Length: 297
Image (cartoon, rainbow, N blue to C red; front, side, top):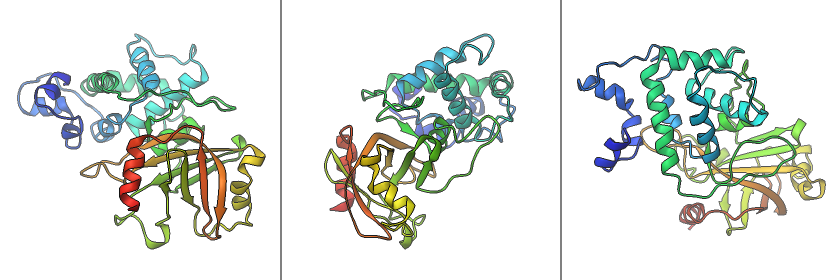
């Protein structure tokens, strides 16, 4: 697959927004041994896999998936979490309490897709163009700064999704009380039909160190949530910011969010919604600044 992409100067999305590479090879008559038993369940797995760009996560997956036998016994909590994130990325459903069974099912009953997933992860690993780093928190957290993640992957990393339960999530904010952590998912371009006038908040990068963000319309500066936001720096709670340019990459492929790291309260104004300027612990990448500037100019 990597050779094909290189020869024709293509990106993975050129293939995976339509089908799998080996599926297309099979249809073309150049790949005979094609087997994907769970095709209906796994039809969009490659779309989600192609956006994985965390070196640490990919390195772990490539090493783990080569094992003869799968087990969770020797894994750290972060490694087990990364494996569960991979499960949800592939299957988009809970593991019914048995993560290993689904790993075996992927490899044994869907060998053509399994082969392509490994090749796609390797391709992603070879094309990472940023230097990621760990974000220090008070709890295990396997996400890398500046890497891209879906909301499902983030919620799994924070323990919200488990082997037995996948939660439906369509909000732009989530508070984890047990971790005293607020997570913000921001889409910069709110011009498409998925955003109503009531949800077109003014979210944009002010500079490489500051990000302007608006709360939900129902949040006042005296509500428990608003007070928590405003007193974030004083109370030393955690705010994590995830940003993407738009909802879709192309042709219905859902876009993942860049993890911009920890944010700290700087200033605020207004109420319902509250406009807050957050100071970023790590600089906002130039690519995000450029996209934000284009949308606000």
